[in-house]
Image (cartoon, rainbow, N blue to C red; front, side, top):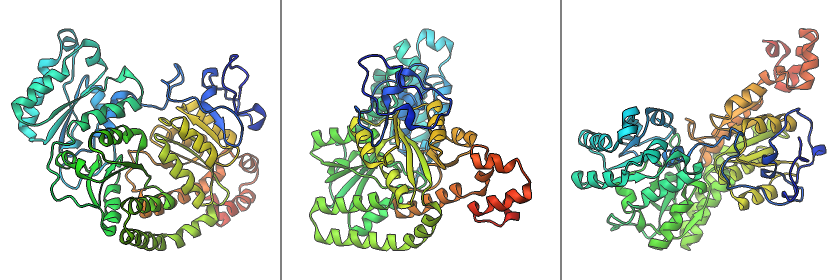
Length: 498
């Protein structure tokens, strides 16, 4: 890895060429300042910038950022004002579940064509909204702006106001033109749109022990798991923004006494606006892993200052951990000492995954995020073992390079990282918003550990050329090689060959 190409005055880098095994892959000189190594001195990770040209960042655009946040609101109409490709790209983009309405699963678009670009698409948008609202009777409608709309100058705000007056429901523009910034700017646009609903509903009957869940998107039903834990404590969840979300619940969520922010990158902006406008404090939490899930329950009990809530929280943790710990301990024996790479959207998820892997006896060798800030990366450098690579807004070349140099056994990421892992011959665990497996809460930790164990301990990795010992073994007699390979997989020689 070349670190000598940075210009004079660049940040003092914490990675030295001699500390890593050569992989033959170079990184862009302009990306060097966004990479650091835990345990090494140096300035903080350069982050919060637009992606470097030519790096093929794993980030999505502003429009996509807004869609992944608002999409799970189940009883709202979601219409993309732009070319059909934008709607197709973000259709059913999350593995979010609904306990009722399924309207959010439909992808509606104005399907702007060449003549619409020339003459404008405002009338087309108005007709589409009136037709869809009459047909589906949604509680509200979100209208997403795209790059084309920003370029041709359609007055989306005026159309939304006009249709809202005609139909009697909120029609909310989402200023999500893709070229306006990064995916994180899309999160902010989504928060601004949702905030227009908050404070418009009746708060009567809300419990004094009440919370909102911000930034949980009910992937594979995770919101229902978390709601159950709090219900057992005696805490009311007023609204989930946005997993299994309902417009009426969002309207009255300003009556809750505390906001819990799970996905800090997407929802901290909304939490701060609610604190300023409605005086609701917020806490950043995570529902992934035993440590963080337990801490979230304890934090809520501590906030309300109730000994009864605290005792109920302890009972929930005791019961749930007792169910899963014996199996985790068994898997830990197989996973002890293995190494993992993590690349996810938000930093709080990265924190949780580092701790969860440690619970399983594994070491994090590479960790990166798309939207972390300087404080987040400092925290990662402090909590990770020395030698762990910490990276912001990475790209496939960098991820491949570090996975090879660190010789990782597992890659934890999303749909865009899966091909990288499999092409390198590395086990993969999907921890992104498209997945269909519940990974939050205590039951989620068990599911996560099961997937990690199955991926890492699969005997197929013994035959991957990436492993130097396998390259030499596979060159010889298959019968003899099988007897050498089998112990690593825990299978008999004949089973390893098969």
